[in-house]
Length: 325
Ligand SMILES: Nc1ncnc2c1ncn2[C@@H]1O[C@H](COP(=O)(O)OP(=O)(O)OP(=O)(O)O)[C@@H](O)[C@H]1O
Ligand SMILES: [Mg+2]
Image (cartoon, rainbow, N blue to C red; front, top):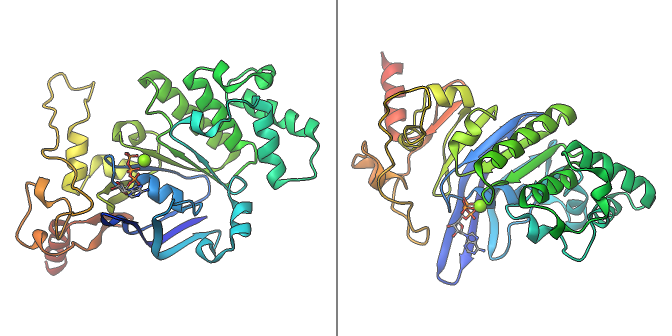
């Protein structure tokens, strides 16, 4: 249902050009769950926003195609785009307080949202649907008459999810839905999203900087580094057989409760300054395998096994060698 094809997004800031998303491609089928993982500044939110064409200025999609059910949304008018947002693709933001209006009751948020897409529906029907959606996310339906500040952070996040599913979209994008919340609430919210996925059959993109959270909750995973997709595979494959040195580093820094003694290793160094990223592979300054070539040339993306994509020279060389054999 979603096809991201060679998408590149730049922020043309006064201080210089930032390539926030660099030639990223992937696809998502109906009902699939995708985890989008990467450190702060790797371009996850920018990529998520591009799917509903809401990359804020001075950002712009400078190359590529974004197809939803075969239609390239980059060719649609702003009005056509409005009919897709919320209805076909819903986005849940990092901080619910910025998306909920403090002076409006919860019910009014549903009325506003649903009216935009279905102007003829009666208020009574909307409120009935809203109550059902609230019930689905574990909030008492009668709280429809409360204001946002009367809820805890975790409950506000649930309200955002209820709003997102109210129009029964085909795709829900949850951008770091849980950073502000504690770990137990985090896991609960993600499990809630997954169970809603099972009920409603929507596709789900979970954006997070924490690989351990999505590893067992998603069908597919994309690992991003400094704007580039460095690895893309099914979660099972990526867990068992990580190929990119960055992914390997991320996995090594996750504590495993089944191992009594485990050496946890943090990836040395820090992410690059995106105004002036390293030449070649952006990861080379932190990579223990970096060779001369990595410092000058951008590595190609190769399919190391069916459906498993890696952007790394080492992987490209290995593949070449095994082909020659
Ligand atoms: N409005 C903006 N103007 C200029 N640069 C921006 C803007 N928004 C984001 N960027 C830059 O684009 C890059 C990608 O940012 P983005 O917010 O997409 O990353 P992220 O992976 O979502 O990070 P985080 O985990 O912190 O949310 C960063 O280098 C960031 O500084
Ligand atoms: Mg972000």
